[in-house]
Length: 103
Image 1 (cartoon, helix red, strand yellow):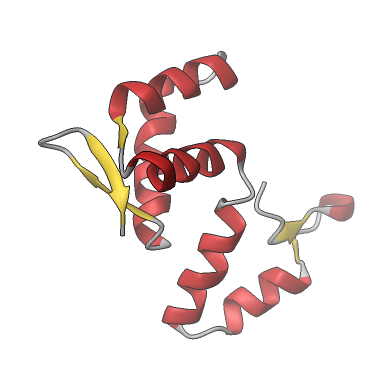
Image 2 (cartoon, helix red, strand yellow):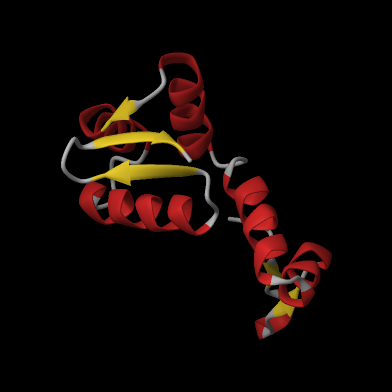
């Protein structure tokens, strides 16, 4: 999904981007991670909403997940999304206001 690994013939092999990620310093890893997750449609759309409106609400994001990933557990995907976005310093999620904002 993030193109950091390949799995030829029952093996797991790092791609060139995966090798770069492993060798990178922690701040560089965040940059690589952010670049990779922005290629995923869900992150791209939420980031565009935050850029345009300044924030994106939890309900908006859950609706996107349900529409684009109907066979997945939307709560689980949402929690994973929050963690991945936080790791990459892409955007912040405030549980109290249930909104995503730029980091």
